[in-house]
Image (cartoon, rainbow, N blue to C red; front, side):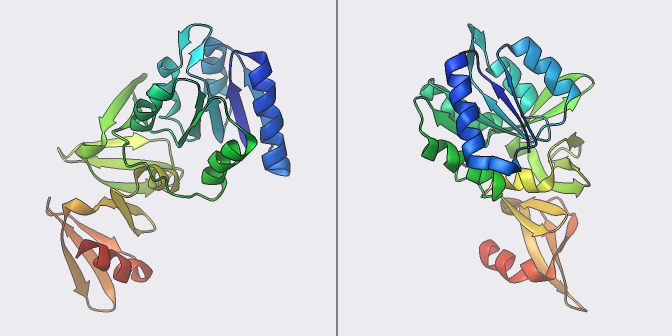
Length: 232
């Protein structure tokens, strides 16, 4: 894993780095520490990452200024901050976890477990998915998303108004963040279950969902029983 720590206090940064190495060991490919938002933004633009550990107060600068950009990327973001009152907002933006300071190695290990095991979050409070559009970051309300289609390392967000947006996160990463609002009905599709109008059984053991929009999407054979039970 390629990991970036964004933390302005050197003592805390070294503690996070030490714990991260103790927990992840050989799974770490690179581990970098940066203490300013500007340098961190430049690093993000030029280096592939799997995980960012972000403080929300960096020498007086607001980490949320960077969070919008960070959550639009392919990697997961974990907040490590003393500002516990910002946790709800952070989850709304799409972070994987919020680790409050002061923290111990057990709590950090719990956060990393979500990354390595692809465990779904129990936070259904995510309200936005951030997408890059014409050089800017646009926040797409989750309530406006009808379904999500995997497109290689990226995903396509299909919206209620008929528009489509491209997201840098994989389908697997978005599935972690969006549970339980969305269900994986197929290897290539995440669907908002409240928008499923009908489940259709076709000949040849093929299955489909019909959405309220009139669109039809395939259901994977191994997922049919689970999807039907959750829809009913």
